[in-house]
Length: 381
Length: 88
Ligand SMILES: Cc1cc2nc3c(=O)[nH]c(=O)nc-3n(C[C@H](O)[C@H](O)[C@H](O)COP(=O)(O)OP(=O)(O)OC[C@H]3O[C@@H](n4cnc5c(N)ncnc54)[C@H](O)[C@@H]3O)c2cc1C
Image (cartoon, rainbow over all chains, first blue to last red; front, side, top):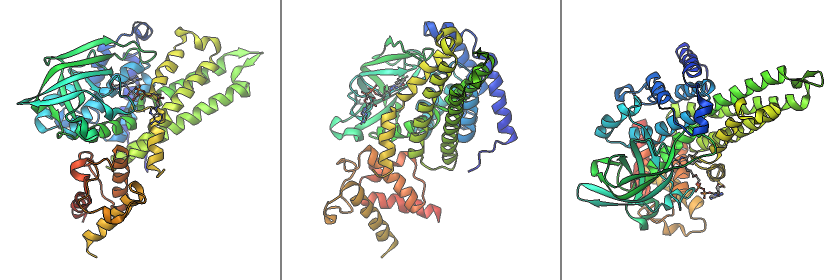
């Protein structure tokens, strides 16, 4: 395994760091309070090339390999404190662009990918329903073929970007008795008849990433907007989740590094009992733990991306990377608060927000429990 | 044994051991449906793909991890063979 960055990769990583620091953080505390999406930041990131990182140049992207992609996203997360904005971008990349790229027909790719890459279109992914979360394939939203279209009926919840999305990958069943093999993905545009956006959902963290319920009431989807074969929804969703688990927490590794550096600075500056608190071993050991967790997370991220670059399935590695990074992100954020004492608990110190943002990572793209179930099973248990 | 029957026997042994423990091997024929009957559920499909990639040193594409390509021993062997002929 070789994780040495080339000069070109280094330049890109440095450029994204300063871009993120300079362009994406202003007004974040207020946006977080209001639960407001940074649309301007969305477009700036698209212009920088973030949205199209893994998409071939032919479809308007940068055509970067997985390792380069996660390296750039990691540095984006280091520079940009708006974890919600980055979460929205990731949802758009891994659950819309990638499924389109790998399962879409040529006309579908030509129609949607360039605008997804340049940020004109915002993408979302609608799998979860009120009655089906971890057991995603027990979904109840139906699709029925009627002539040259499919008619969708049902509802979805927890859809990231749901209320700002122009294009949503919606999973529905064509035949409930076929179980997971009856499921199919559809590219649903926001203007299709029968498509309704429900109330926005207010979250604990990642508050700058919009989320909503979606309703399909005899929603008409042209047949050419079916994504993949009829009944291929399971492999489509598996693929999408695999990429998401492997890459969605790239930013978090950067965020963890930022928290580590912030905590080191604070532990050196803050004096109690006549000395820097970092001199107390109970404080410094927390920082050592943070460093260990950042390194573990980074190793899991790079290893998975490296294997993906080699073109192999990474079911096991992606689940492990998701589990390792999310759990370590939460612990790092907890330590950062503890090291900052009462100040860390205050909103203005911008540490507590990191913990609120981190906690969601144990839930989306499959909970930590589900990652453990997956890993255990892949280990032959 | 031909290449093909050797492949089938390796895959059959794996499926019997992992997903049909205690089952009479005679019941698992080349045309026994595996995905549509739920013998291979979503987790089992991931395990099978990981096994095929490792065992035969072949890459399997995302869209091939489905009922069409994995529903029977026959279909799985055809998939493996098509990949091996590309590798050779
Ligand atoms: C920030 C955020 C963004 C999201 N974005 C999207 C999105 O864009 N699109 C979308 O479709 N969904 C999205 N989701 C939904 C997410 O995928 C689900 O919340 C998740 O899959 C869990 O489902 P659930 O909430 O219904 O919990 P449940 O499945 O009801 O789980 C409840 C608890 O039971 C545990 N549990 C369940 N099954 C098992 C098991 N077999 N073994 C052990 N423990 C188990 C879980 O781990 C959890 O602790 C998002 C969620 C969050 C928090």
